[in-house]
Length: 354
Image (cartoon, rainbow, N blue to C red; front, top):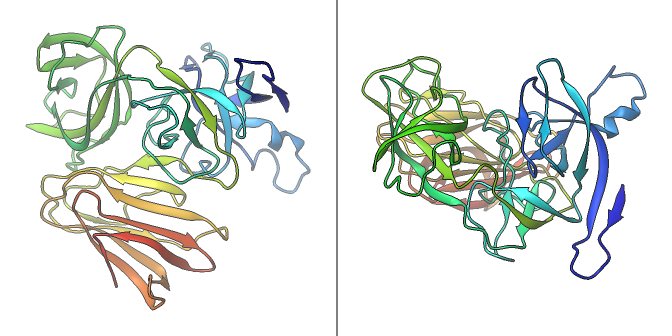
């Protein structure tokens, strides 16, 4: 760990060299997040490399935030690891963004569910490692549809309907797909997509499909159009407990039991036009005392609800037994909990405990 930046006009940063293992033939943007691979090597061996092995964020390592890349990193077709420099929590850094920021206002957290090279900072999660306080006002979002009402043509999975494409640039602006309607036919692929062409004021064509196969009619999506190849801002990287970052889920339209989720951080649930049956999260016990988890509905869910079903009873706000959380279907509905030997509700908006 090396601290630097103790002269006027230069923010203090904390630098560290780490070994970054990632995908071949891929570029990772400056300011994107990386997480430690804390189970590197043989479990029973003393492995000092667990202190310097990092990888792209995922739902299994998002509680081991390491820092952000100081520079962009490019892997060739035969490379899978490189020594790189990161900025660590407790100091300042330029972070990659997917939404606008205002100097010294709010908090942004890293995304760990968006696919390759998408560990950018946007929605607010819990405080701590993996979250940052913006120290610069930056306008980089040309258009966003976080509530899940964006529309993509399911017959080609590349034609996106937008409000106004006037400020978009082919080959420069990029579209971050966060979540999408799951109709049971096509599997949505969150990720960072380029703009191949602009058809007219309200339609653009992406450079690849946002699902594995085409479907019928239209598919609704949550997305943001980013201005430029890699907008960044100066920010203070929070230290302390792990925030877990943020992720997005794409519930099955037909409803389901066992919606996949990350056990750490804050999960955003997009709008769904018609949910044919409840979509249930089978909520397992926590692993660490103080582990925090949140679910937040960011778009209207029609027909039925997203529910939490606790494998082992927890505690409601009033101290009584907590077996489930019901009725998460309106914008702003949310549940926040902390693991203290059992899950304990620490915040509830709109939803109902049972």
